[in-house]
Image 1 (tube, rainbow, N blue to C red):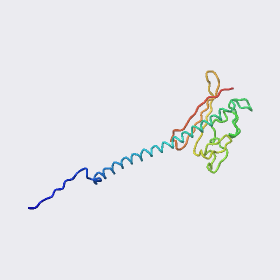
Image 2 (cartoon, helix red, strand yellow; image 1 turned 60 degrees about the vertical axis):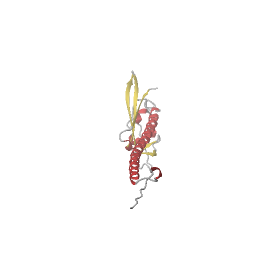
Image 3 (cartoon, rainbow, N blue to C red; image 1 turned 120 degrees about the horizontal axis):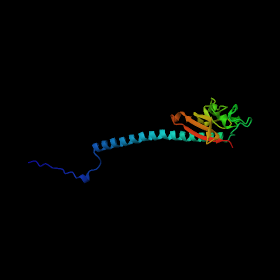
Image 4 (spheres, rainbow, N blue to C red; image 1 turned 120 degrees about the vertical axis):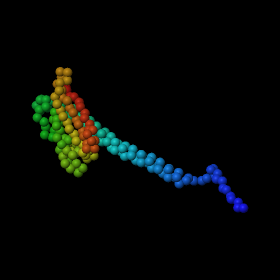
Length: 175
């Protein structure tokens, strides 16, 4: 008579994982990793939009401050919105900025090879770090409760903002 030996397995004595458990873990971790990658890509895209938007706000604010610091009337003729000066460094009244050509630039640089391809400083010199920003300034006469004034609108856009540029508006009255 043959004697058969039976082995008993003790669950506490087992070491390691089965192949099925390892494969299931890999699938779950892969799905989690894919989710993180998807979220990371979205955050990075919107993070750069936020940076461009912040720069656009700063540019619009700088241009608006510059415009509002100018005289209400043309100092040479005392006329409101007379003949505009030829270029931005010579602007001496609010209306000179209406329809600001080439972002107010009068020169180029290596980073901004064509006039108006960057935002520019007050002297008309391009700011190399601000490439591809477009600045539009509009000035129009308005009446504010019987007081004559000028409405100033500064719009700053960038190719990367996909139609979500920044517009600031302010009013200037005679001193």
